[in-house]
Amino acid sequence: MASIHTPKKLKIIISPFSKHRHVFVECFAMSCKRKIQPQPIQEWTMNHKNTKEIKIDYLYLDNNSCNRCRSSEESLDEAASLIGPVLEAVGCRLSIQRHHINSLELAEAFMLESSPSIRINGREIQPKPIETHCTECSNLAGGRAVDCRIWDYRVTQSEKLPIGLLIEEILHTIFHNVRTQPHYTTTPVPSNIRRYFDVSASVECEKDNACSC
Image (cartoon, rainbow, N blue to C red; front, side, top):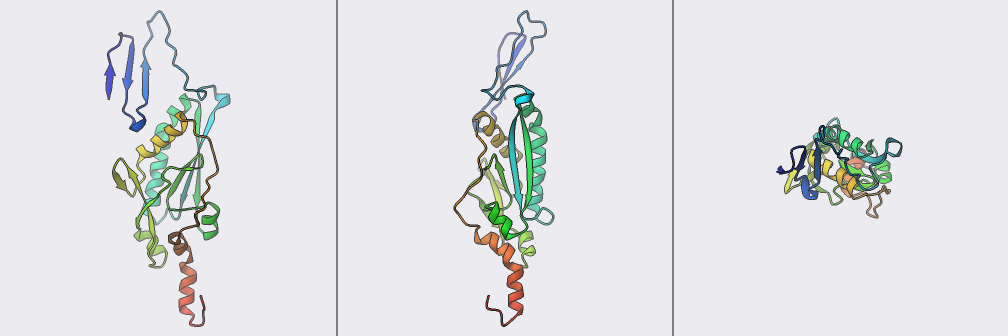
């Protein structure tokens, strides 16, 4: 973090906050003759009557057994707590919806491509998922191989959602004025997700020699 030399009463701090490198200005003008007013950020900084809502959808298969789903939800909560005061200062607020995808029908309805997933204003924060074998979800699927998402952030991959990644994506949504739009994909629910839900039916079929599944 670098500081710029300025007159005594004004201190400007530049923070290398991800690739966007936002500039945060901290003004101390208690004894200045001229009061320094913070500059508005586009049309977003209004008043509380015009608060902008940033919608986050968190989609997961199982947050009880699956460590990736559980730990990523913890990161979501921590990121929301950290960024809350900043959003309030620029006239925004978070709306978080959690969706337990517990059936193939729900997976199709939400067009789930990987678990866990996070969408901000309908936009997947990592639209091209990277997946690896998930032991917990494979066990839930009766031993059938199931892959879950890993997060790619600053040339590092992790099973737990990086808090910095989510905060950067929220700030990107605000400062680039990304509008809410429904998530849409023409890609069908991948076989990996279908296998997770179809396993119970498959097991029953294996037990019944007359089954033609």
